[in-house]
Image (cartoon, rainbow, N blue to C red; front, side):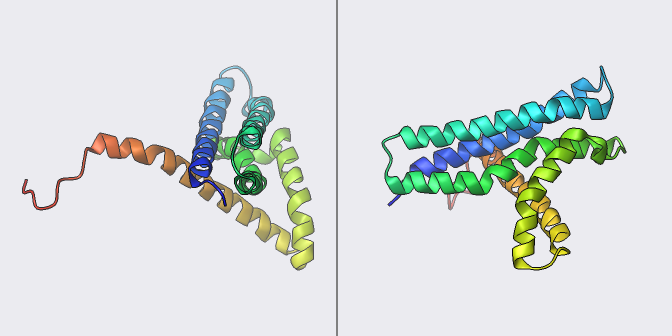
Length: 178
């Protein structure tokens, strides 16, 4: 068996890491544009924040492995880490993509973005070759971007929803008239 409480806590930490990576990357890139070109700022920020995100994910996995949780829980945490690693790394990259889009600049001029895209291609291309032909790779890259963004949206929503519920106040009791 596995502990749903432990998994929920780790997924909450993952969500916070995703949202934090996105927001911190966006803020750092915008701050960097005050001193240098956008692509230079992106190239300086992305490697640092992707490394920080990977270390954060690794720390959560190691903490789970060292915990007194069951073997099943540890295996599920490890499996989730493998499945969610690329979407987590996409968080700071998506912030850079959004800023480049709003600035009407092509993100492909960033060396860090190009290296990330090549790294993801090394994972996705063999999968697309195993499933079908080379045309499938373009579809897989687009699907990766959408799924990773959806994971980030769900992560953000899972962090923001409890706050929104507190701000909006408690639900009226059944049968009470306002």
